[in-house]
Image 1 (cartoon, helix red, strand yellow):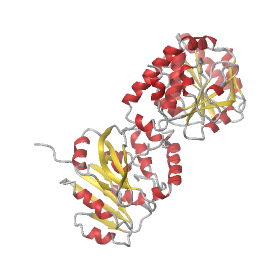
Image 2 (cartoon, one colour; image 1 turned 60 degrees about the horizontal axis):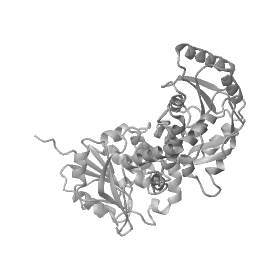
Image 3 (tube, one colour; image 1 turned 135 degrees about the horizontal axis):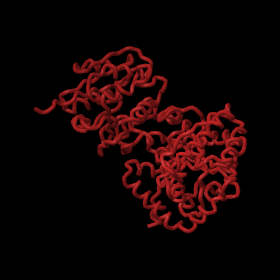
Length: 494
């Protein structure tokens, strides 16, 4: 005997929406789905809403003053008894046949997302929002045009909703006026990425001058920023504002020089992570001994130690990113020194959420103006074809995690170029920071720069190929390309 159709709970919050709510209710009935409940939480309407609600005996509705939309939704979610949750606003409506598709797809997927149609007040379609499948990382980049999630075409299981409750037992943060949905999506997507996409319009939502999102775009954007900062550190514990990651192959006086230099920072909200990539157990023991000496000698700064997942320098850096306990990371080598204000300056550069990576000024190395011409933004082509090697980056940790940091750790020249290019085309901003000077005492990178010159055409071709593959398999690529489109650069290197 076939399994019965899962029960679907539709949650609608309303307040003085008599102009629209009948269409909302009728779009649910038009699904011709036998197993559903439609819960309407009204905030005490004084227009025609209550008369309309009384005319539909199947509705489960209440009308009483509340603290706003999030409070009403929290009440509605808590009353739901269905297996699948449909969040349908009182001025929005559903396309035909949605519930039967959900009943099929949500046997396998806890979250389903699909296209949505934006309309004017009268319901005339103004644009189709593709609303592509996306990861937690894609949800973070609210600054990409058209990247916002169309809430009416996101459907999720009640089990996921219960799992993602906030510590206070509520489902939505009532302190968020515009973007309580984005906060919920981020909480869900950390564990359940939005992988299943239905490639047709599933819902219609109105944007007009008197609804709150349409009337307040700037305030909505600022709340998106609050969500970004709330969740940017959500993948691991955060203890400091910045982590200096130093790969260590053997104990040395050069490492002592760098540690001593870091103690002179004017701003001490940072830690130091030593990543041991020694090739022998004895060398690892010596590195750990030196680490313990640093801990005793430098009580004002947290110094940590971890073992690299690979036996090369760039595997050590990637391990450091995964083990870091700060939202911003900076790569140093034993012997490098920096100015006393570097930590403060670096943290300030990441005050803009869009900033993903910063290139400091490596003393005696390359001219940053090649990459950042005045008033022209980033010169992406130089990242690929320039004969340079740039290991001393400062980056937002989440941007590196998304790309798994250095994917070809045994080829540092390629790995650095690929990382810089892919971060840019993921929609993060890349900045030059000539005011932050790193003095590479121990090495001049001459060998790496010579390799970059010798192999730059082959490296460029390989990076272009990787970017094309990324673009082909990434469901969010077309949307992201509305900000930064990699295809012209890809085509330059067939």
